[in-house]
Image (cartoon, rainbow over all chains, first blue to last red; front, side, top):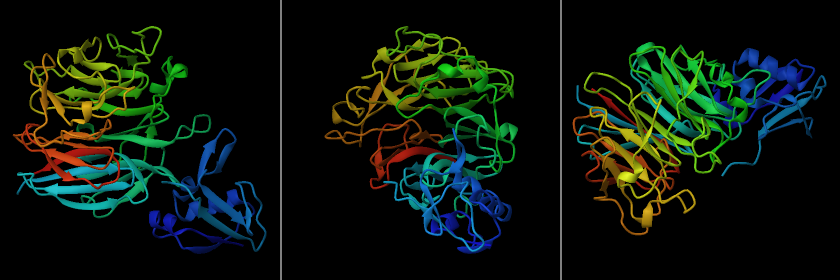
Length: 90
Length: 364
């Protein structure tokens, strides 16, 4: 069961999202799929398609147990997943 | 019920809604709305009273926002806004255009394409016939990207629709979007080896004039990168108008009077390679009352010194009151209004974020 921590700005878009949730998933892709089942539309805000298939959006940073993560990063049974907007904008 | 006039203002840092009465002298301001999103376009759908806003967040991507209570609360959706597994990723929404007679809403996006919603913008489907046009592999972007920025539904014929794409030109469908034809004959592309190609023109804004002596609705105008044009046959042939007194061929926005197809407003900028601000730093809106045969400079109340203002393609609007209100927003966050068809102007706000779109709504 991974622990997922989401940023304030995403919760502003989806007010029903919990800041912290426990989700059973073996990879980042599966975690986002489970999250989208609970809150439809959220996955598309965090991922986009590219020439390399579906990837985490350019200005969204994901970390698994403190390390930068991609869509195919595996999750351990007690992984901590942080989703953090990148320092970007103007 | 008293008349309410709303201005829907999209900016690089959210949406704003201004409200006044029929006098249009004092404005109440609400915003920023759709916070965190850059809003390219807003629209009011008279079929259900919803306000729509399209744009993108730098983090969370493109969305269309929807409010059913004139901006007090909002929902959003990106459902169906995408080209599928084999297509390019969507960057942003450039246009949201209701077609109230048919209960439809259209969205124009970057990279250029057209989407249609049958549920008020809650979900979307790609109108894929446009990107199946044989010219698609040769489409080239303008400075703002390869964008479908203007959508013009025909008011009475369900099967007809025009779109403007930069820097590709005008396309029309007469079978509900299944097939499309170019509508660029007579429009110059000064940057092309062939100055009159079939496509590749940089249309900046396309407007349809309603009505006419026989009720016909075939009169279109466009502000192009390379001139101002008019067509009397639905875009099949264009004639150039900027030689009739305008100070420049270059500008972005254009609006046509809702009750007079001969009256059109545009805002010439000094030139595509000269800074793209109002000529000589003197702000002016230009108006024709005779379908483009002559143009008048309207500047009463506008700054005439050091006014290096730019106005983008969606950032001008006209309302439908008897003495039509005309409005424009600048790239440095000024919002200007005229309640007398452009004769005199007042600055409504001068400290908004960069303004990308202005739309005027009359509720009565």
